[in-house]
Each structure stands twice: as structure tokens, then as C-alpha cells.
Length: 230
Length: 176
Picture (tube, each protein chain N blue to C red):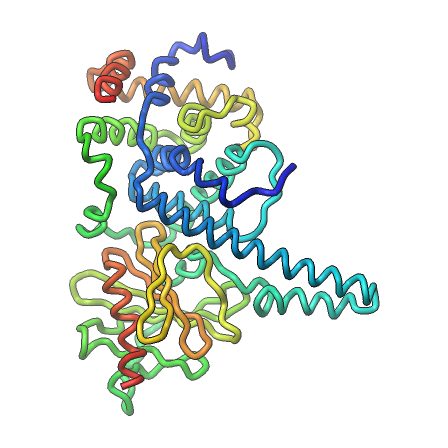
């Protein structure tokens, strides 16, 4: 055995593999460019925060160490961590249900009888034919995620998560942004699933599904805001 | 050691995409893996020792392994037509080559995980043995053995279809 590839009898295969020209698709390049722009911006903002923090540290020294720790957490955006990757945020919405589906709200035809901190899950059955089929509860990044699953009856399932606690967790890594009725929606793709994230009443919401287009998810996600506003 | 410059990462997208494709065996999964890898890297400032490409390979590998663990715990779903259509049209502008690349990468994707990672690091990403062994956190001798076996298995898989490695090389290049 040798580590010299020149006398590897299978060097032909290595050559074959090296000869492959398979550029990444342009839309992937574009997504990465968007992500790096966003990442660079976040880095600059973070540097500014760190700079401000150092000034405070210089002035206050060790007596304010505890306060500084709290400040760091606050500047980072909330209760420890405060940001999730798109993959982590959408993970639970792509798993299976572990509890029964909530029923339709007896008082509001646009809602289900389930909510997180008063933020209610939508009822899509009548308008779109997507019926709630199950739910689950998870704890991710120190926050409680409640997810309701909906099915269109043709084998497609969508998970809709509302994250408890305020301020809302931020999500990094989404590739595209869309505004609907004054709300910013971030769209991305994770391991074959389309994902949409946005905020409702200061709570992070995530909708994700496989075999369902991003535009369908966006329509489902944004309908409730419009229905509530109407 | 240096701080990773997010803007400089875009130059690695093509290489990472090929590596991801060879790891996953499908273009769609490769896109997701690359996107997830960059999302991880960009989630906070990174101080990197050595070349950016080695670091990216390590993150790609970790993201791939994490994804596989997650995937093994969830039910599989058949890709919908719209997902297939959503793939970039560029590779299909040269269908013969796209097919051959797909075939080659799918053979690589069938390899045992350790062999596959070694082959992707060295032959797809172009890392040296030393760089690859660091990125994959294995001894150089181990990497060499895995790489040898990986190439052998790919060679056999392609040869089993009546194509010798030398012929395969000619086929892919004929479409360049």
C-alpha cells in the first residue's frame, strides 16, 4: 500500500473523477451570494456590537462582568443563542406527528383550536383543502416548538410550527425574501423540502413540506395574515 | 489562522457542489447540502487554520453526516415532479455528459461512507492527502487505504457495466 497516487493502479478512476466538469447551477450560486452578503452584513453588525461592548468593558472593568454577560445575550438577540439555521428551524416540521390533530376553532372559521402564546394555528381545510392531521411538541434551542401537520389528501404534508417566547428567534440561511401584506417571508430549501419562515405577533413561524412548492407554502403562510386582517 | 471572509467563499461553490453531489448521489440533495453548509459557516464569524477549502470540506462532511442521521429518523418521501423540474437546466444542455456525471457520482455515492468521504476529499475536491486527512480527522495512512479501496470499488462498479476506467475517462472527456 502506498500514498503515492502515481503508482495507484486505479489512478485512471481518479483522473476520470477529476476530469468531471459539473458547475453548480446558477440559482445555487445566487443563493450563496445572497447568503454571503447577509453573512457579511451580520458580521459587520456583530463587530460593531463587540466594539461597543469592549468600550463598556474598559469603563466598568470586572464589577460589571455579570451585566456584560447579560448585554452580550441581549445584543445577540434574545434568550441565549437567538438564531437558528434554516435546517434546525425546519427540522421538527419535517418529522412525524406524535399527538392528535387540533380541531377547528368553534369561534373562528379561520383558526384551529390550538395556539402558542395566543398565536393561533390556521384552519386551511375549508379554504384550501389542507386538513390538520396531527401535531407534536419539541424543544429546540431552549424554545418550545409546537407543530401542527396538515395534509392535502394527495400525500403531501406540511408542518406548521409556532415558536414560543419573545423576542422571536431569528433564522439564518434562507435564500429569498418576499413581502406579503406588510409581512416579510423568508424562503429556502432544506434537504428536499421547501421552507418558509416569518413572524406573527413577535413569534417565529415556520412552514415546511416536501413535494410542495415554495409558492404554495407562501400562499398558505400568508393567507392567515390576510384572513385575520380582513 | 485567519478570519474567514464570507465574500471569498463564493469561489468554492462549484467544487463544494461536486463534492456534495458525489456524497449524496443526487443534484437536488447536493444543492441542499451546499446551502446548509454555507448557512452553518456563515452563522457566525469563523477563525480558520489553513486553507478555506479544507475548512469547508470539514463542515460539508459534518453537515452531510448530521443530515444522514436526521434523515434516517424520518419517513422518506418521493420527490415531487416540481422538485425535479426545479433543477437547473444547465447540466441538461449537455445531456450525455450530465448522464455520465450522474452515473459516476451515483457509483461514488454507493460507496461505504468512509471510502466515499476519502475519495470526495482527494479526487473531487482536489485536496492533498495531508489536507484531506486533516479535514476528515483521520490518519494519513488510513485515508490512503480508504482512498485506494474507494477507487478500486468505483473502478469495479464501472467495469462491471462493461466499461473500463480508461474508456470511461474517454467518454466523459469526449463530451467536454
